[in-house]
Amino acid sequence: MSARKVDYLLIGGGLASANCARWLREEGAEGEVLLVGREPDAPYNRPECSKGYLRGEESREEPLFRPAEWWGEQGIELLTRTSVTGLDLDTRTAKLSSKEEVEFKQALVATGANVRRLNVEGCELEEIHYLRTLGNADAIRESVRDAESVVLIGGSYIGCEVAASMTMLGKQATIVMQEQKTLERGFGREAGRFVQELLEAHGVTVHGQDELERFAGDGRVAKVVTRNGLELDAEAVVIGAGVSPDIQLAQRAGLEIGEQGGVRCSSRLQSTAEGMFAAGDMCEYESSMHGGHVRIEHWDVAFNQGKTAALNMLGRDLAHEVVPYFYSVLGDWGELEYVGPAKDWDEEILRGSYDDGEFTTWYLKEGSVKAALTFGRSDDLEHARRLIVDGVALDEHKRGALADVDWDLEDVK
Ligand SMILES: Cc1cc2nc3c(=O)[nH]c(=O)nc-3n(C[C@H](O)[C@H](O)[C@H](O)COP(=O)(O)OP(=O)(O)OC[C@H]3O[C@@H](n4cnc5c(N)ncnc54)[C@H](O)[C@@H]3O)c2cc1C
Image 1 (cartoon, rainbow, N blue to C red):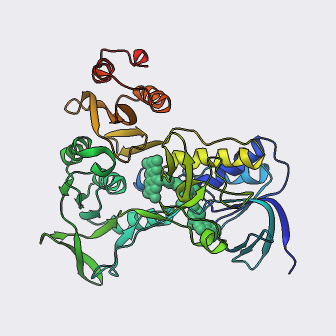
Image 2: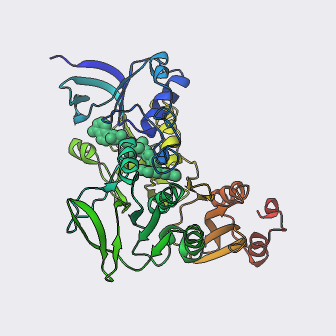
Image 3: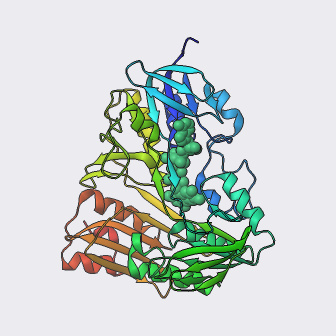
């Protein structure tokens, strides 16, 4: 079978690919654009899987990146339920699971991430779930329909968001996690304590400094047994134990893999092969802002990197310099927003108050802001972005200004 030819091959049916396709067309790309994704759905916004869509408040269409007809209107060919099974960088040819071969001029590899699976005793029991796709969200909603107790394994944002959604559905949600406080790995102990108390105030039970030992049940899960000896009733379980970048295809093709397990890219998001770009959860890019290569699993990063990759495919020669933004919605109880990320920091400054439920935490390293988390003070984030990009050195006076809600952050420069 002779290979068909396209100008732009976008591999992966997630947000990074979808936004790359969009920007190729918005910026005037005239050639053939083919987007190949293995899921049954057209590209969609994955965050809804733990929020409104999980709770049954949204239709299957609402999370979609664009309505079904948009792809045809844009002249973008969308192949769903199709995997790219091999890539030959010398001949610039991709093999598809449909057995078709596609020759391309430039490609984006945006294969995202896979959930980290926990292989403990009883893990094969029914009603134990992971959450990555709309299909997973459907299965969880079905599984908890008549359930009273749902156990979440993991105290990161998936565990917290699903616990909030389950509570809103009238279930007793219990989190089991290794951390002392929810979300503390990303945001520190104090902000973590705030989130945990918010969850607990709405009825979520949290067991920290513990971990999953095994599941028990007859055919379907009935109990979660923890290392500390707890035996928790569980009619359904959702595991949020992190993800790992899906680099299988890229690695087999010979693209270099970085220290953080992603496809190593330049600041322009080009991989080690000319004309082969990467974006989203599996892209490890060089960032002057972060002082080295970083790989970040946020919705907004996938979105913006898709755009940068598209512009660079069109020869714009742009470094990806958007300050990474993250948000997490806890039911209808509030939203966390964050810019950064700071992997480690040596000082936290609080503006506002955890007790009042309105605050911004500034994360500093060696005297300058590396990240900021806010709850109810979104306007502070613009200043955080500026302080991070400019690397402003903060003396005692400026530190005081960051801490004091009566100070105009405009003056901190
Ligand atoms: C439940 C949930 C809630 C989230 N909530 C938030 C949030 O509130 N805030 C936030 O900032 N981030 C959130 N995220 C993270 C965010 O959704 C991801 O960072 C983002 O989806 C990454 O986009 P991506 O395009 O890189 O990868 P993905 O969305 O993973 O898309 C990659 C796609 O490529 C497909 N694929 C893989 N290999 C192949 C292949 N060989 N051939 C064809 N297709 C392939 C995959 O099946 C997948 O569909 C959430 C994630 C989940 C799972």
